[in-house]
Amino acid sequence: MTRIGVIGDIHGNLPALRGVLRHAGDCEGWYCTGDIVGYGPYPVECCRELRKLGAISVAGNHDLGSLGRADLDDFNPEARAACEWTGRLLDPDTRSFLESLELRHQAEPDIHIVHGSPRDPVWEYLTSAGAALKNFSSFDERVCFVGHTHVPMVFILGPQRRVSLLIPGESGELEIENGNRYIINAGSVGQPRDHDARSCYVQYEPEKGLLSYHRVDYPISEVQQAMHEAGLPLFLAHRLVLGI
Ligand code: ZN
Image (cartoon, rainbow, N blue to C red; front, side):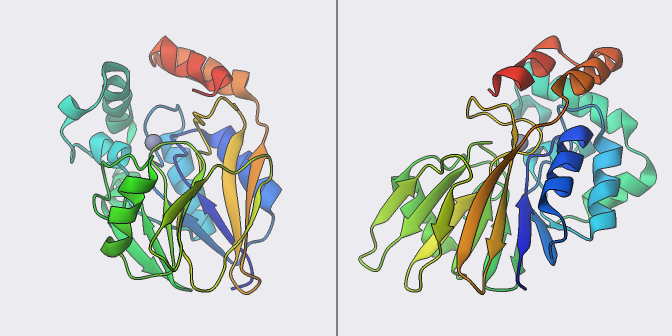
């Protein structure tokens, strides 16, 4: 495959998802690190869009929470309210799509996909080089894509078994080098938390060994309006402009 789009933490934010798809153009494959639903007002539409795209996705904690397959006591009150709201909205078709998602997926070429971390695919927030080092033994592929923290981040395991952490900047490009292994957080399409409100996603060109981060504007106020109309918690709408 020449160019793969990697997205995640869409969280029912359809305008953000559409913005990213428009920006990326034709990719030969699409991988999604989960949390397609939860928080945002368009869960059904986002699932439909991913199916249309033929994206391969894993399940995130909010997908499972909305299905009633994760304990809602493990969510904060706003997240829990949004999961309950989403769960009531899911039609049988969308529900069975979400139910079909695996917790981890091994994909071509030499790619592993999870939501949280390789050793704890649903819940671990992978934020440190120390935790990443322990996770490299939980998958075999060269590259693992993760989400969950909503913060773009790359962990690189070098030949000396040392992990370095890289925070990608604006449209950051990174060479995927032979001999290294990588855990790559693709950031969040629908609710970025790195103080940049724009959608974040990754393009990966395996034959060139090239990874690039991209940020895309979308009409935030339109989504906030839909959230108000749906009666979703105010804080969830407010945080979108702050990128938190
Ligand atoms: Zn998420």
